[in-house]
Length: 192
Image (cartoon, rainbow, N blue to C red; front, side, top):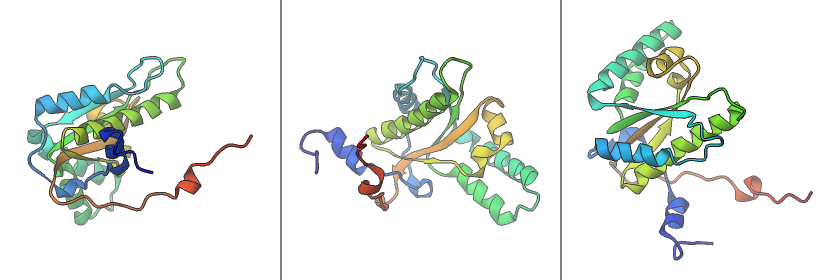
């Protein structure tokens, strides 16, 4: 069933696809567009109005510092790291035209931590939607660096977690479709 004739939003949601950061090219979003994307991302479900997430923009002139941070963290946390792995971290730090680090920032509250973490994931997805709606392509990645205390501490505090790295740019080539899950397996009806 297609809903394209009823809503361009539904058509977009039916075809939404992340782009690979390594394939992103200029132009990327300017500062005003990034601020608008973050404002849209902040309009996410948030039980208790806690805003348990933060967005840290890594400006273009700080990408080499980010690459150095990744090298330092990788060398400290993995004594057997190879030069090829370090070079992969350098490439990661410099992909895409814009980079936003999303942090899950749960607060002490009667709202369960799990709900706050889900809200951070929803905010990250809304950031991707905002980027796509503005004509860009985006990708949400994690990798070892999302779980590194050294990397986390560079952007936040021990009470926070990196929800992901969102790369944004223009598509350098057509986006590939990937296999999607079987709807009969993931969408069932409860029969009580």
